[in-house]
Image (tube, rainbow, N blue to C red; front, side, top):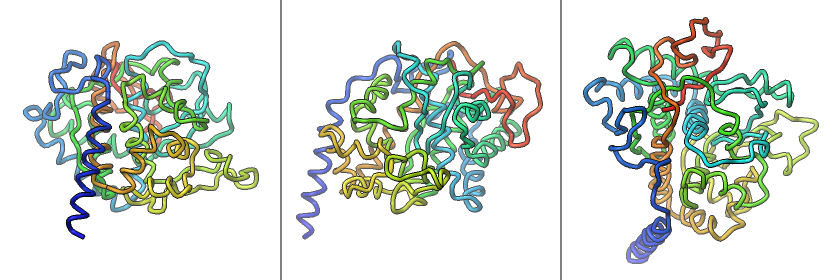
Length: 362
């Protein structure tokens, strides 16, 4: 039995290595080492080693304190971080009219053409189009702002960006729910303005008909099949509203009913992949992973070996934190929710009325 287990583990490792071997070499839109530059700042997991060495401790304590009260904070952080990373990167030309329904790591929401991302934006505008009241996780937004205040008090102004705080807080949320620790590339700047329309519409649709359709969006950032399948594993946490999986159920009577995305929605594990193989995928973007040989191989691997899922997820999250931005940026000092040029007061939830995101445009 022990020998069989060792052989199975070795085969899993060989399979993962063989899958990763076909990943294209990273291009300039996905820097993958500490020498890459964001707005003149060298990205590195050790970026704050000298300027704010206590930062990771600040983030960890804040997340743990919030997690003890609200376990869903991890889901909210994953959602925010995903948008913070992928909507303002350097992109290829796209059809900006192709998507209106925005798919994120842990839920679905709707957005109108004049909304701003990432990652705090005017969902009131979105509701006018789709009558949707879905909001970003208020507790996660408030947590990020509390960490910014603490970091600024202990390390000084113009040191730690809200973008980096979000990335670190997301990692702590994953760890708190049983997920892996992973490296985060730090040194990103906060945006000077909202994402462009083209960048907003790059996020994958809630309803996809095939894996190829899903992969097409992620290929813009040089993500492989393994990275995409691993990132989809964030659906191991949280739930989706009925409107997001309406093809599985008639939502007319209960449009705001929520469905857990796997059998252990409060724990970061590999049960999401087990459910997909058993035909229990909730979202269409989940179910298509079992319908294509390119995605099915890593799905089977991750369902069998949680350690391999954690390894691939960590690499994919590092890539997210390394996505190069453009246009120049800043370290926000007034609030994570408004640029330094704005002096308007914050809304009661901690989100400014204009809802501009903080992801770097560096």
